[in-house]
Length: 399
Image 1: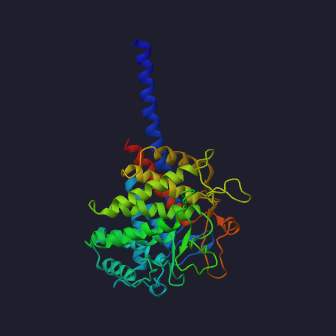
Image 2 (image 1 turned 120 degrees about the vertical axis):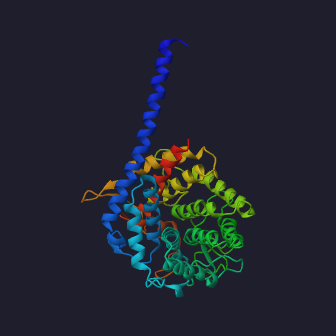
Image 3 (image 1 turned 180 degrees about the vertical axis):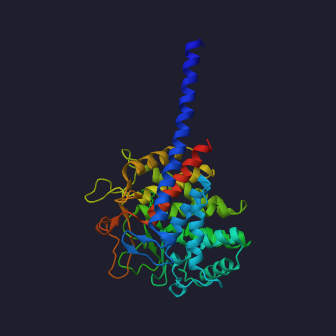
């Protein structure tokens, strides 16, 4: 090799290293910007969704708190952990009771914050967190089940499993079972994931329908399959995050672990196929790109980015999905990360909520999904962004 070529190669290597360091630093900057804005926007963990006040024991908070914990680990900034601790300390009484928890509703949504309760118990060793975690875990013993053994999403949604519910319950269930050595529980945890994929996965597209009614009684349920009629991207985002957050707790020798990794692989392949080539993002109704009224939605993109990046980092997914995660993350930054009127960074255009059944009745139609309210300052969207940002930095560091 002649000297000019060697010099050029040297410059190229230095340039690539500088760009990689710059890219990692930028991920940390974005994570900190959005995290700092969140703790200023919602003091003491009193979280709202846009202008709508949320319940003190809202699952949205769990996603936000998970994101803040990861940003704290990424940046070694203890302020974010202190924020989460203050917020939970206000909600969990000295005797472990949670005034805002609604056990009689038997809703899987009520279990999501159990993950942060366990995190604080492991960190602080306070008896009140142990008692609170026990109480939340007891709900799963009482939770109604479909004839096939799947948890009802809520008591008022009989015989229905929603993709959302896997995120609300299973990572907490797995974390608790690992901490307190309940190896048998992993049979049940694996069954929940396997059952949902078996019944919601469309054989033509590989996409997962939002929900499944085993009784086929709901108006939204297909009379043959029991599935809801459309593919909602965030529902699949919940399921993907549930997989990558549950798997680290699975015993290495448990047969369910390999089954869950296989499910994640199939889902990742499908997610990649439906990623918009121009923006790197995903549409609200996943398979209807270009249909009137359909739009790119940020929370789903953040969840997919997180799941793909974490799946790669932990070795559950092929490294090829790094490119999908990176393209999605750049699309999120370009299209959805903005400053509000006060100069604080936020995530815009997040769908606040979507569901099925209830009053007024949500029929799961295409028109229903594209007309659900969306806006800025959604804690679960912001939490998913923080998780995605933290994972992108860790994936780069693992190269």
